Image (cartoon, rainbow, N blue to C red; front, top):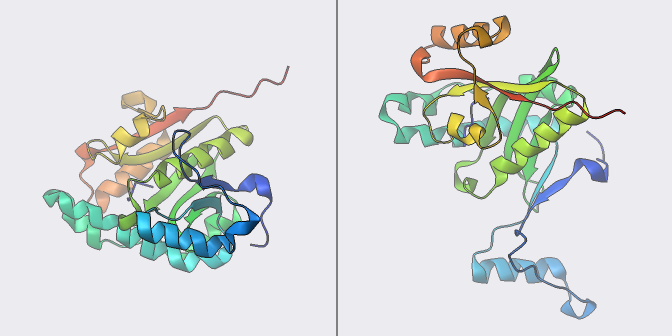
Length: 226
């Protein structure tokens, strides 16, 4: 889903996407034998999807991210007037490496540590700006995008940032309507600062339909330091 926008990691940097509270979780004992083999058989017989882990991206992940963006972009083929976006240019691995170096890129990986989604952002003043946010087409609708966005918002709060921003489509179901569920609101008129206005203008110059694009912002509550 195109949402338009190294070394060992510590445990607090890792989150998993798995069964919800009302879903059955398998229980294991020493008698069960090889857990991985049993889980693989269970997935094959029940259609259960592999556990997804959200972690900070590493430099070595960068080369895999353009392919995920390309896969996610295929969803636009369902919208005739935006179908051309499915064949658009992707963010370069070098740009991803720059964002990864800033510590503002997170990826979703399967149980074999293969990337299936990512969120690349950057710190702009007192805001975290989401540059690119994609989930591989065949993994959409399983909560991966939600988990990635929640991870980025959590990190922005931890850093004491004032807000999270992005530009996106107003009327594409997996764009602005998706972000509204997390508290983002569309900026209008004087609410759009110079930085976001410049981004929207640049998008229009590259063929994006200006009337359908918008800037969004999520205000973050400042942590109580009393």
